[in-house]
Length: 250
Image 1: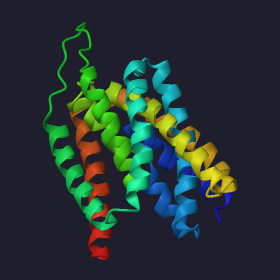
Image 2: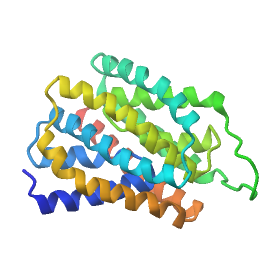
Image 3: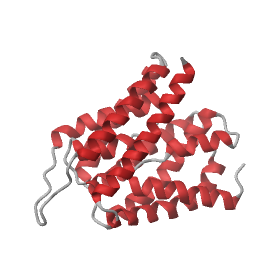
Image 4: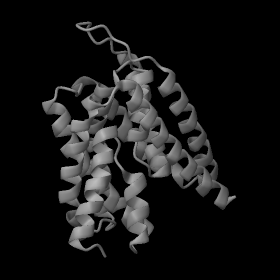
């Protein structure tokens, strides 16, 4: 079990990554908790509880900075939440190894497109958001979240940017708020199933709150091009992890 010092350090590290990139951090939290001895289902449920905390903290910082588009976040969640439920039911019917391999390859492609897309916008120019693509983004991120038990944040940010036309800083802030609602619903479900270790989640909370606030404040300090390269590296690392796990299962 985590000691308080390790919990704070781990929480700050994961929270900073979550706040900086607008992701949940479940790809780091789940394996860490499994390594510490939690059963995988409890680790997933506890991870969602942690994501609820970190995403709320980072969303608050992004809201104060004016980097959250509420209409995009709520429209996306209207499609993400039911899609995640459908994905959870489908996960028991489909070959998980094939799904993980396909999703891993998809993330590599998304990383490539994300880096190539221009983020140039003239000063004073109004944001031009393609709201018609937001339901598709919500359905895709929710479905993959339910199917694979991963955070939809790894898709939210690049798809918000490439499909809906959000600048990267708005994509990160809006993703943080959207993740809060997705994780909250998932946490409530896992609590009902007895799959959340509340003691571990509470130990991680202080570090996650601090780290998420730090990460959110770092966003405007990074140039869009550099941010996109860093985020693409993150996507590729998640993709490689999924592909390796899929290969082991074949």
